[in-house]
Length: 350
Ligand SMILES: O=C(O)c1ccc[n+]([C@@H]2O[C@H](COP(=O)([O-])O)[C@@H](O)[C@H]2O)c1
Ligand SMILES: Cc1cc2nc[nH]c2cc1C
Image 1 (cartoon, protein in one colour):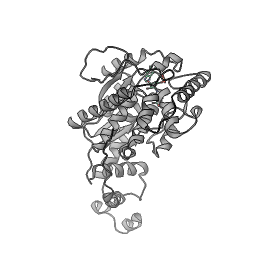
Image 2 (cartoon, rainbow, N blue to C red; image 1 turned 90 degrees about the horizontal axis):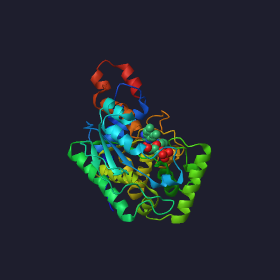
Image 3 (cartoon, helix red, strand yellow; image 1 turned 135 degrees about the horizontal axis):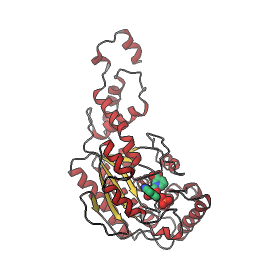
Image 4 (cartoon, rainbow, N blue to C red; image 1 turned 45 degrees about the vertical axis):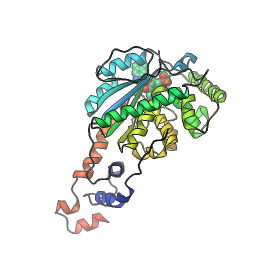
């Protein structure tokens, strides 16, 4: 699969930075917000960037790796939470409403038969990702299908007028594939990449690491990122990776959430690293390993809130900061516009 991602509008970088530095503030004093504004202007190639119809894609799947005792949660929580979200409930139902996202739950592989709903997108490849302790998590065909499904969902959102996608996920057991992908793509040791997920004990974490290590030893590591995604990933992770790649190819803004959506970005970046230029890292998850993942991708988390809920909650909660960055770039007065500076103006500009 090849995805063509255009480079950022680097030719505008100096002029964009000049516009930020002309705002009535000491140079650099709005910190990360300045870097967010700059990135969005570089993505859109304009001095008047716009955030249009933000959409939250909470992509869900089940994981038969749970048969190995790698999660503290009952697997039914996956479908129950999906129903909760489309009815406006749960963390992401609430935060999407508060922060202005239209929320879609994408069924990439939940082990449940849902009734059709306008905010539930059916992209089910199969009922549950295979148990990757015993066999590859997906066949190559299933993995490619999930990637393509993600691309199709992004295309649908672009055609509805969205240029900002928040990514979330729901899937009991999905910190196991996310940990495996972190280890496989970064080369870090499995125990460094594994944490408690939704709530394992220390002993549970040790067992989870053993299961993941055994799976990596059994299937081996490929040079082909899609094969690695198929061996160790999850149906929602592959769907998100495809959706992110398509978003970057269309110059849309990608907002990651926590450990699992960032593992999807890792897979996407292994397919085409330019996807990272279009990505904002909403927060640093409390899940052990997320820091390693974000560092590996050279990302800068907007917030540190000790969230480890997933669903897209971090992406939604970071949105006001992203919105503020664009407002600052478009509307904060420059020294010239303010018209009240004389000598102070010169002092502040240096
Ligand atoms: O976003 C995160 O960083 C995050 C960290 C730990 C757990 N989660 C959520 O918890 C579920 C996976 O946890 P587990 O222990 O079942 O693998 C899944 O539904 C995720 O949304 C999410
Ligand atoms: C209640 C609950 C909500 C979740 N949201 C994401 N993972 C979750 C796990 C549980 C257990």
